[in-house]
Length: 93
Image (cartoon, rainbow, N blue to C red; front, side, top):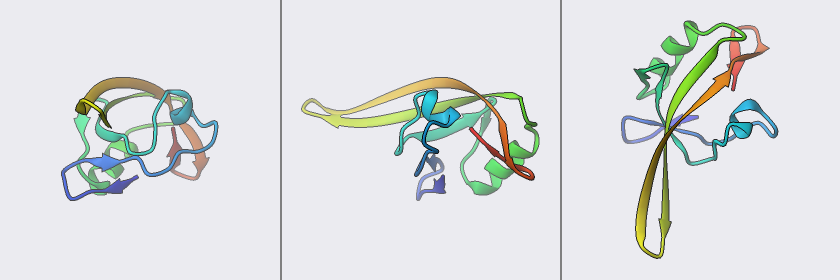
């Protein structure tokens, strides 16, 4: 994930076969909230992640923007993902 010029986080990579990919996230998706807490930058993401333990189910509010022949379409949806410990205090979804 990385910060953008706007107050939102952008999914830039997904672990192949990982929980996030299985939940339907795609690169380019925008993470708006985690567990009803707005995450606008990496600092806010870190604060939210400190409250999550291995095995916890976290709810992500996601926006996906697609452009087609009829213009730009915004989809907002929620996904729930179970936190998995990857390295000490680094969780993946």
